[in-house]
Length: 261
Image 1 (spheres, helix red, strand yellow):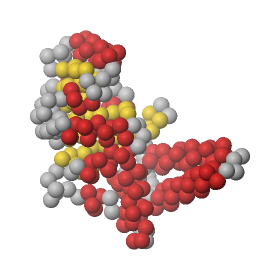
Image 2 (cartoon, helix red, strand yellow):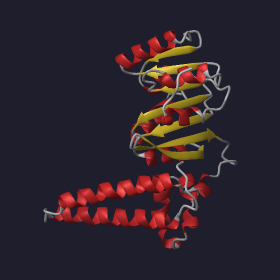
Image 3 (cartoon, helix red, strand yellow):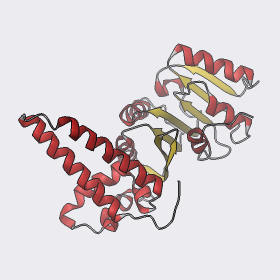
Image 4 (tube, helix red, strand yellow):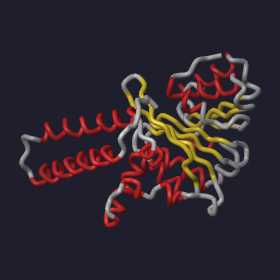
């Protein structure tokens, strides 16, 4: 059985055993092959838009002897699905804005019919995904942040719940940060950006990720130091405010013990 990267293994571990799974943007179909080989799922769909990765996915499924239970399909986003044929959808390795667009297009076209679980790994822009989930009745049940090869990744797990059972309002309530009620909107936005579960159970990896983000902002500020234009000054003030707010959130969410996840 193939060995997955830490990132893909984290995604695989969050797929509910026994679910029919569709991996969108599957690249070389590593995740579907592993899920079926390991016995975690009975069948899978590997969707890929680009011809090269699509052909590689076909080859991977054939090499594993799994063409009877892994359907490799070429197409854009969730268009490779038929309504009702998947219980779980996984999407990984793209920006959060694009991921939210794919989910929305799938929702509008009925491709998410029957899907009850989403496992999502946006490379950037996680807040776009979290906001899409809330708007459309999905409850974020778990999220984790990991570091691999010098990069940070967040993996989000969401399930579709009846509205009376969903607790999104409570999940994105920033009162645990102990900020003034007048600043609720500001800190709610940071929960969407940094992750409500991640901030409630902070880890060293989470802090390391956001300290890395602060470092990037500081480098940008250093590059802007020679410019005195009004636009540059306004952007500089914006970046300094962003750094201060990140630091303030991290100060409100100290880690109690060493943890890498």
